[in-house]
Length: 119
Image 1 (cartoon, one colour):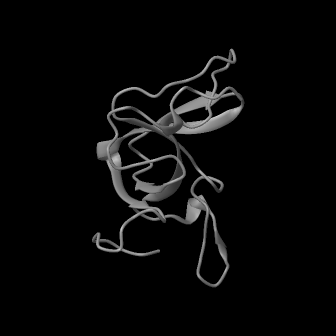
Image 2 (cartoon, rainbow, N blue to C red):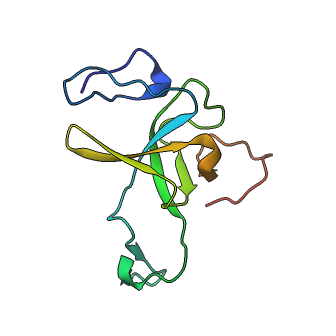
């Protein structure tokens, strides 16, 4: 992959090999597991078809736009899977979100003095 000029954008290149730069408050994330599937605390795999009601999903930040203030690549973010746009780059599926669509962030760099949950 071709690296972009900014370290905040991560390493990403388009279908034609050109660098990709996220704009404004956009965030590019990658889902780690099969979409919708999850594991219970006892290790049981729960398929997406078993979901009832709305459920938020976790994803890893791959790249961020210049106006994103609170996120960096490799952060884990919590978002509503219904509020998204999907894109394929070099055979990998990604999701484009706005910073305002993020409900929570999990990262080792967060200060101990900040409020929130520790996962």
